Image (cartoon, rainbow, N blue to C red; front, side, top):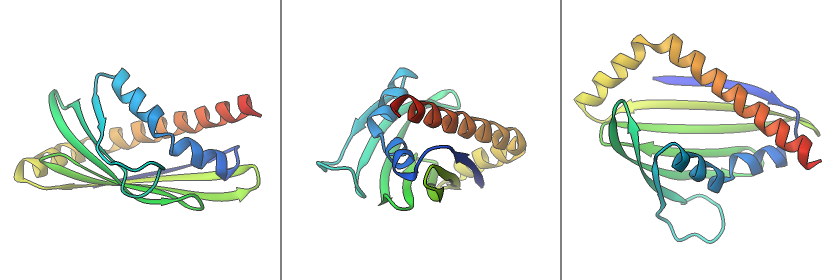
Length: 155
């Protein structure tokens, strides 16, 4: 199963990349929603190989989630691999400079099943695909507006 969306952001690519790689902000946001997040790598600087373990409530139960940053390119974006016992995901965030002050943010999430129970989860998600796609696009649009707002305040 795949979800994809893109947004054009009125901010330079460097600022947008800094926003999508502000991992501490994402950790704080997850914690504020009740997740337990722990960084599991020993890297001193951001880059491929960063990893996290998290416990979060998904579909009514606490789930163990692993995340690893598999690609880190300031010129084009990042990619993450994520997984639970039942599902695996690949999250790709691509950046394209449309001009000096405008960037296109494209996010693609690909979900796959690891187990039979995971296939059942994917089937139920597939039934709600249009609603899930709409919610994904709205959240990405809100995130893009937040990036623009933080850029305007910083300028």
